[in-house]
Length: 212
Image (cartoon, rainbow, N blue to C red; front, side, top):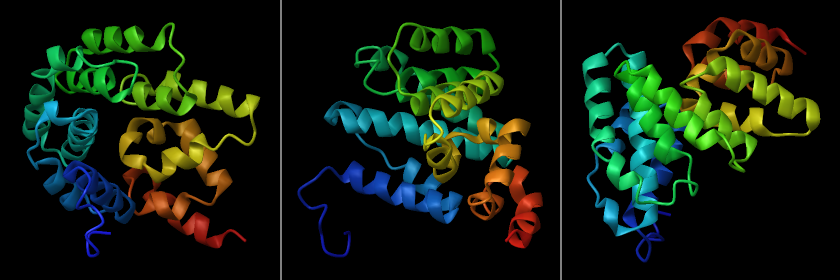
């Protein structure tokens, strides 16, 4: 699409977000970080503020995994500077707003504020199950896992586990939960994909390869 100039009449941020998702699928975290640093005007449109929140939240995860806690905290502080702006948006348009603020507070050590932000969104809302996982994963993986398995028990065809495997970068703590790991190993089809991208799954690569 870039080569054929398909983005010429659309927002540039959409192009960058599509490239970022491709970098997630490819496991190219350096490219994701590069894209997350592209400046854009949050007031230019709702996509800009949504993608800003998602970019920053995911980059905090990458820096934390790399042990670069100073950079993770810097990104967290950048996110929290936008709290007043986020609250002018429709908070229920995207979990990324208050969810990313909760993540930022967790990175900075204020788990109490993070939990209050999550409660603010979870109680009394009609979020889809997959959106609830994104909110809760970095704050309370135990609750996120329990809610996911409840959803699966109600609907065996629920594809939330597939979606979370594909977009693993936004569900890292959820994916690290022991019960969730056990599910993916038993399910089988995502283990090799996750083994190349999520440290906790590297040990399962041979197991998956040996299954019929």
